Image 1 (cartoon, rainbow, N blue to C red):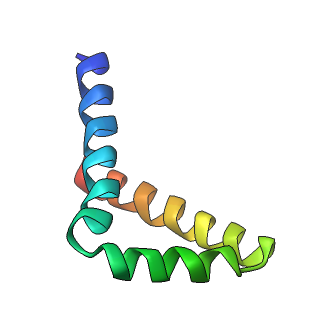
Image 2 (tube, helix red, strand yellow; image 1 turned 30 degrees about the vertical axis):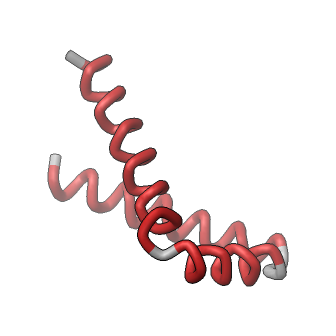
Image 3 (cartoon, rainbow, N blue to C red; image 1 turned 45 degrees about the vertical axis):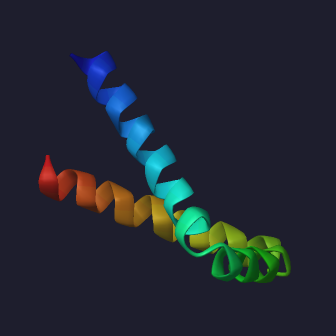
Length: 62
């Protein structure tokens, strides 16, 4: 059960990660170009916020 849920979650991550470059390739390229220019601290803050939002959503909907 847990393995299936984990695999489904990983599959959803791949789907969501691939959706933006597939549907809006030029926008995705622009965003990635700007992301490369961010400082390490800014990237860490963005990563932390993303993790925090994901954890809160997981807690709310589990």
